[in-house]
Image (tube, rainbow, N blue to C red):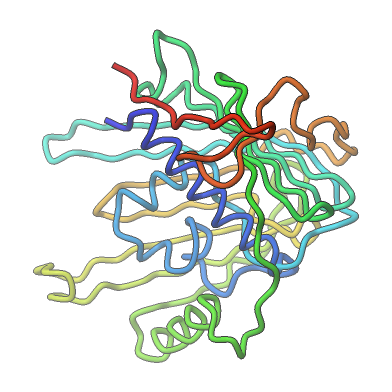
Length: 292
């Protein structure tokens, strides 16, 4: 069961990962399809962490420069389906509202009503992330408690600095060379009115690598929009955890309202993460409690 504290921890972890990544480069598709699933090595990330990050709505965002001059709003739908050994299926669906303005500010509203395990008394639970590269700050909002967790984000790091992106690229090139990773170009197609370029990656976990008797193939397919500078559709199939699809729908290219990128005036603001942060004004904000 994914209780409230675990959900918040995963959300904030994904938020921190996203804010760090968005401060680095979004001008081109990631160097590997696995990047589309929660960060470097996401396709190789042991489930269920990668699956949870996807369900939290952090699919489609990649490291890079802040994207300006390309405002939009949309709804991203993540569907994860797992088939059990007895044929029973578990399906989880998450809807995430996305907003970006011309200055590169980004807002994500993740609704957990379809997951069920994080809803209290039948009420849906929503978390909101605001990433503001102009003010160099990010906020994770909890509307049910009217609390905003304020976090700074790191700036770009050069490839020479040995960051995770460089290590991932090196690993990907090595696996392309030894045949455990296969890359296929899928051409272009229009997705919800946006032209996107497709790439498929098939990663093979060789027999014995993780105690597996036979090779395991993990297939990731993504469709990247150079215009929006983001993934607009992806599918990952992993025999260990099932199939996850991510689709950006209802794309509108108009400028979102400026109020979407500001913390509401009736929210208390805490510095740092969800545990033991200090609210502005001197009051200490208690960590959220687990639902009974």
